[in-house]
Image (cartoon, rainbow, N blue to C red; front, side):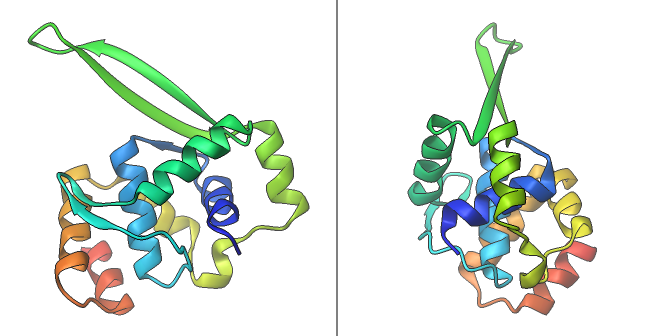
Length: 147
């Protein structure tokens, strides 16, 4: 399965993912849990980051498969804060259904996706750094997510 198909499968299960940082970390954790994303990662300001995933998201958005919503709100300093949310478009949903894209075959459950979507972003970044810096088994990742 290509990274595009894996991302479509992720969005099909997740519904909406809020935040670019969260999206990057979710994909990174899933990759380390056995989902065969081919994207490479490097250590960056807020944990492991993949230009490959960034490019695939831009491409899928351009192709009308996913949509990106941008929300702008003021900060306490008066600057703009941008936040992003991603979800499948109707075209993306049809593609996922037609091609029966399902991450369940890699052990991904709705509960796991919901946990990754809702856990504190700082904890998710911390987990990502831990996985990046130390060899971490799938069971160790699952235990970390359960705590």
